Length: 409
Image (cartoon, rainbow, N blue to C red; front, side, top):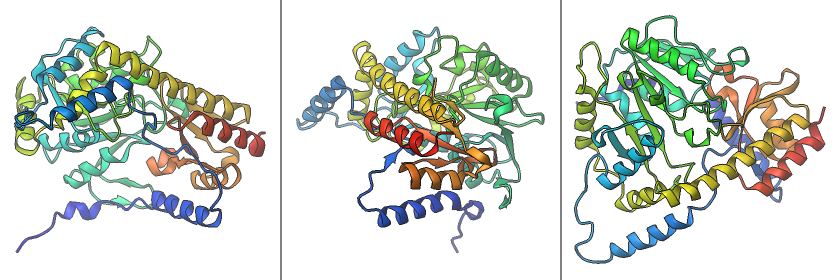
């Protein structure tokens, strides 16, 4: 008799986000003509760069010809794209071999799958608040125990608190853990780690044989030259870190889907010599993935070309300007906020001790602004909401005007 994977039964239903959807549905039904300002988005709403659009049309046209792109392609992604990715890292002084680069169909796929090459008993550490996929995929793999409905945390997973006292970036765990998920700049808090903060984690991982899974999906928004955009800017990181990145928001590839994962051959574990993790990930991908669309790969190579990077920077700059408008708009209304400087997210503290959900409801009802309650990202997110700069400029200006008019201190 076939049986189900009982680990899936441990997954908690995200009640808070389902409640957000319910309240938003009720509001729109009651106010059908109300213009909502969607500052809850996690995806870039700007158009693809012009040269990428041209490449998209050209590549699609070539596919109408017999004999073009008839093969499955390389499991790791085509060499021309991996070379373009390697060139971007070289520009930051980071040398990568092409066989250390694995192209994917968007970062979330590999964020979910990378844990499959590690042992089922490995102890996982995550930031709190954090992106749910880091936790959920490890719950599915059996690395978590029961879920506590009060704390909204799983037994067996180590949570690293992120709060005002540590500028929303944690210290390494005090106990020994095996897999450490770091998102930088962070979703949802917008916090960006300093070089010294990342050095602490690299020292910890190398000393204890842990692996850092570094989500650099928002690295393009780091504009401060003193802050690292890649964990490989930290000495020793190639021995303990896997980095996952994406073009979703820096090049508006949210629907086109293209990202990459770096698995250095220098990585080693107690039971795996240097090169073995790289080989394991290659074996996994060759068994379960045929590579992303060739159309997306040609478009990505164009986005990473010198001309494409200039166009993508204009997308990033536009988003950061949106974040500045949000941040300054909140501050002028007397609302405390963080992030939004090297990140598209502005972490906004609810006034007067309000809960995340109550502040969400207040913003919706009084300013017609849709946010995301911080408590949905973990216990340390309670009392905050996340506002996103992935919205058109005019809508953001109106949103800030509404907030100032209704909530200014």
